[in-house]
Image (cartoon, rainbow, N blue to C red; front, side):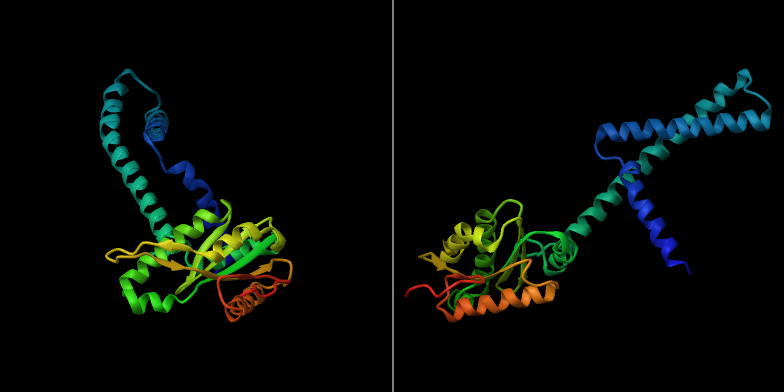
Length: 255
């Protein structure tokens, strides 16, 4: 089997899909009109070639074709649009962490694999400090609520074009484009200091902080090596007392 030819056909179909699937009422009407012109043209061509001409009596059969084709076209276009919407939703869900709504690990792996080779910037590996105590003291429902609130806080503080994903458990990973470690201090300091989170059903909010390991994308080549470097710096931040970020030249914060 020629797998190369199959992949090329799949790629061509992917290119054609936006033109074949109606999106919105205007495109739906345009698709209907174009398909109806195509069907009627086929009917007239076969009438011309097989019957030898377009005699006056073709109007009534043409009306029949129009009446039959219209509902079939409308139903077909509706089904195609619904199937494409469902496919888009399945694709979105496959890339999304259910709890936080962020990218999941698989989606972030794809982003890093595709963008890292030619992209200036840095990578942040972020961990919620003492997250286990949130689950132990307030329960797992409070822990889930804490993760959702932490995700919203990270999204609010990080640059708009940063890619943010839940990496697993209480860890998050961030790809910051076009900024080196020396440029991330303003928002990295704010992230490390954390935020107070109200927990439903509790009399007082809890305050969470973050430990962060930061690495320039240019420091090491392979993605795995870059993640390992950021992870090493993350645990260094924890060993230095948490609530701080560690880059290539970081030093422990004064107690």
